[in-house]
Length: 255
Ligand code: NDP
Ligand code: 8X3
Image (tube, rainbow, N blue to C red; front, side):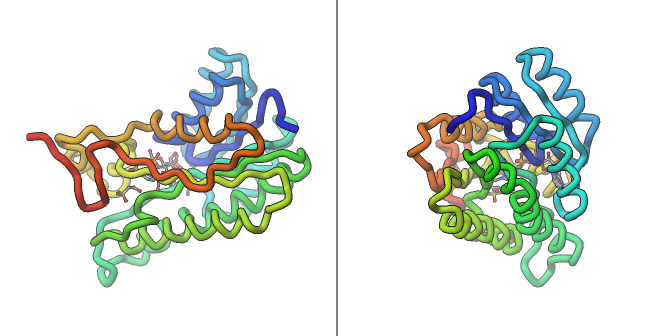
């Protein structure tokens, strides 16, 4: 039975998509568990959303690469909010644009441990709470990089192909339970993603030059729409790109 005010856990809520999802879902009356490493940002957001919408917001520091950290965060969130109904495994990153043979271990590990292992750890810890509630929705945040590989993105693309595979497997595994599984797979979107990937604000700006990219709220709106659909409707996968992006390799740039 769908709760009137779903309790939604979001990893990577300190910026970009996760922060936008928190804002949009709080406005819909959802209670929130917000996780990321930058706790100061989460606490400021929690205060703002509680005051603006009267919802309960738990803010907790978590490093999704670390099992103990994820387990502690999820347990504290569920304890503080009285359970969990929705998991949004959003925390992730690209690190560098190296060709496969050039990729340093540090970047390889950052992407695989966050984008693949962190997602497993988050869902593994959160799923028992959804089962206990008897109603749930799990969101993966994939990417066009999980549909079409590109040069300089071998490891990131591998991690997002992995996300796609995990979403498919999990949907099969929970079939028969009232738990929906959705992967929202965006193309280029202007968040802190490119600043993190390129380790340079100027280079990040150039990525979006002359293009009208997706905004974080566009992606948050996709999540909100999937979540608000009736219980018998499951959106498996939502591939969403800005109008200027026809494919990973075809981007319309204005002069
Ligand atoms: P941002 O860099 O703006 O946000 C990434 C979020 O992930 C931050 O809140 C960051 O928080 C968190 N995060 C990163 N590593 C960890 C970690 N080890 N533990 C906990 N939290 C972590 O980028 P986006 O919002 O764009 O990215 C969100 C997701 O969307 C990612 O999975 C990304 O791959 C995906 N994506 C992005 C696209 C884009 O073009 N922007 C397109 C398609 C998919 P903190 O640093 O505080 O820990
Ligand atoms: C982020 C989009 O094109 O940089 O997942 O891989 S892209």
